[in-house]
Image (cartoon, rainbow, N blue to C red):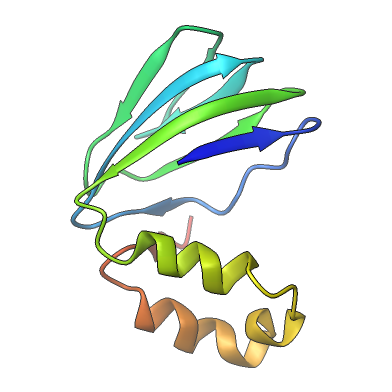
Length: 113
């Protein structure tokens, strides 16, 4: 996948991927990552890893572009398509968040931190 950020982004809730490793390569801009409790910023050409089961958060510090690999892929593409795909906020309504996360528990889990 490739992600593009137009401006500084907010940190998502701390989460982990129980069975997936992630690899990030910063192509442009700067990304801030908190991986396993350690915070660091990464610039163009730098890479970082998030091993399966490691709590993490990541956000841009301004306009940025990142190449991102998730292995094994499992249902990650479907997760993002459903989360962002149709623009319908009802899929993300408070009443359905728990069900949505339960359906994709092999791909993502919130840590509660």
